[in-house]
Amino acid sequence: MRLCIILLFFPLIGFCQLTLNRPSSPTQLVRTALISEGSNIVISNVKFTGNPGSVARFYNESNRALLQKGIVLTTGYIPDIKGPNNSPNTGGPMLKPGDRDLSRIARSPTLDAVVLEFDFNTPYDSIAFEYFFGSEEYPEYVNQGLNDVFAFLLKKVDGGTYKNLAQLPDGKGPISVDNVNAYKNKEYFITNPPFNGREVLDWEQDKDLGEISLTYQFDGLTKVLVACSKIEPNQTYHLKIAIADAGDELYDSGVFLKAGSFKPYSSVESIKAKTEELKLFSGFNKSDLVTDSLGNYHLTTHLKFNTDESIILNESFEVLKQVLSVLYTKLTWKIVVNGHTDSDGEDTYNLKLSQERAAAVASYLMQNNIETNRVAFFGFGDTEPMVENSTNQNKALNRRVEFVFVR
Image 1 (cartoon, rainbow, N blue to C red):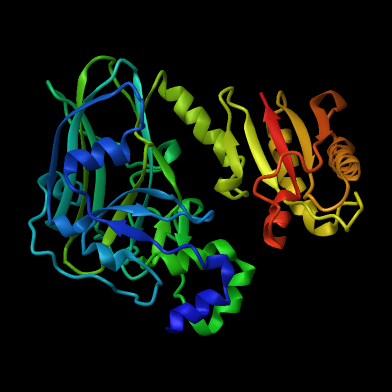
Image 2 (image 1 turned 120 degrees about the vertical axis):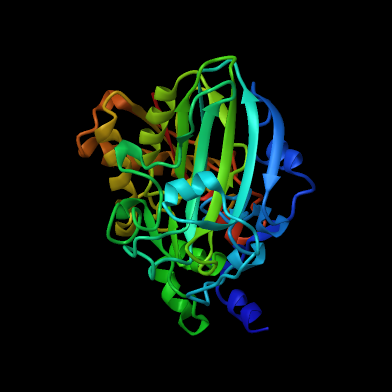
């Protein structure tokens, strides 16, 4: 009952609860929850090893979710990964053996291994998928020399040795508690603070972190990362997704894989380029950013203006500075500014107001050294609502400025 009261008065985290469902079979899990629908990739020989209570499909429809749905594998019981983060040492033995390959990586015996593996074949020359890692070993086991271990092990079926795809970009090493934490490679790390209902209003200062604390039990998480590799077209490969406790069966860990993100690509270089581009938008909510079929980025913002005016309020300039940062980095990109209003008022008035607000934003960009020929602006009034103008909350969503970053 206490949690229900907290959620009632804390709408920013009211819909972030993690839903966890046990899959009907390993094959169904891979084919329907991991592989991109319609992708040109053939899957075979799916196998699961470990406690069935350590794997699930997850759903989190919140706009602030690190990943909204996918697959999670943990060294403990699936329900234990679910927030709020109210314990520093959640974990327990699953009474399962370790994994030889993971023991080699950890340089220590492993326990409670969970392994999902399969063969695949594609005519393309690269593959990639998105994921993040979390652990209760933060912060107690940082720099203690022994961490839980996970890996994405890839090799050709007809020969070769495993290559671990669970690596940081730019050659910064593997993903582990010792290598990604508040002190080392901290740009990839999220400290998950304890969730305390009595301090719920404090989360207003950092809504994203507040939601993470309510959603996940793990005391530390990585940011969303991309695993990718170049492969030989039309050759059969084996992928082994594995995680295990190392040293003891306490302080569990887990790895979350994004639904539909396992895809073939024409070039691993295009994957890396895409990853670098997405870093430019890291200051915005992922749910506000979409990519169209031409590779252009569409960003939705809710810049603030006085009622019936087109003067940009001070609280909006931080967002605009981030937009400028993208344009300063991508000097060949152009930008289109689209203004939208809610349905209050006459159609002609709303159209004019949206045009004036879009023009004010475009003027700000040009005043900050973005060339005139790179900027265009339009007003749409209330003709393209995101949602029905049925409530004040919906109307606030429809009052927006959208940016289209054109290649």
